[in-house]
Length: 455
Image (cartoon, rainbow, N blue to C red; front, side, top):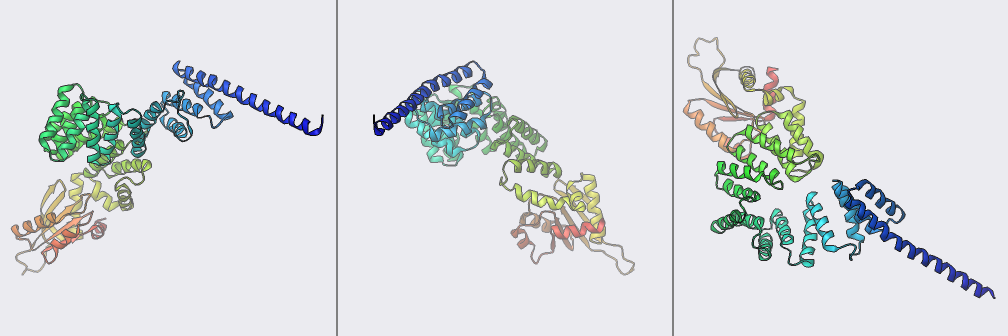
């Protein structure tokens, strides 16, 4: 036997050994995967996780092991870890009988929705409408996402397809009713809502949409009642609480609004990173700001920023009130109770402006003081001029309507001049309305100087 023949025999033997290893490994792998499936079915989640990780450690590219590890995490309530595993499968998996594509895409789609990734979820549901074109629920999920993104025409199209495959789909009738209402198609909207309630009066999600319609038509008591019913649906509970809170805010019932927002935050779970939870915290902070509980408002803004650093105007709010924390006088002005606030304004009138208060009228937004010049020793000073001082502690810049109202009052009271103090500044329109008029605008910096004088 020559050297060439020997080398060929060795090469062939090695190839056979490698082939045997590959075959044995692939024959063993399905058995191991089957064992993970059985463990999950038996509820032995920790063992299933351990078994899946053992396979992945030896074979990191085993997408089936990643898939069942994801399913085990789902059973264990570890949704974030589950999504990570399913993302890997989405990129590397081969769909077959062991990995059914439709089931997989439905699972990962719902996780993307849970973690507020609507674009990724939409991709999955659009694929599902191709894989399972007769399943109404997949069209409904596409419609919901388009609805949330503000694409009304696409949403209506998919709601229509939902009803094509399931005429008794209550939630599609309800959502379509709200969309039609927003499009000012009142008759059609009412028809869809009526159909939904008639089909299933116990489907409480319908009342959420009814509440939205009643709220927009200014029927606030009716809207609140509808949102109370909607809270019985677990999917809509948090949204319904937020909407009920907004109704109470419109009715200027701040305590009831705060109660709704606090309950909405609790309904968001421990993680508290859903979009609804962030909005509930944002509106609760607005209530605290409105009632001058600034430190509690700051606490909510900080919690929002920890989850989403760019949420609405939260960074600007925190920056604004960071300065407040360093200024005790302004902090006292903004956060004190009504009695203390009125006393602060009285002192500002005397020491900051040099006037003597004659009449003090507390208001929801602050207070008005009508005052005269400080007592003069000159006997010739017979009639003293009257001034109107407006102390506002609103969270938003004051509009021109505030200036015009003050001007009317200054005129009717025969005041020589009015002073409008604002801790939040003035809009451009307000500044324009005050030009060449007997009213002076005292902005935040000037107000701080006035407050510094009283200590």
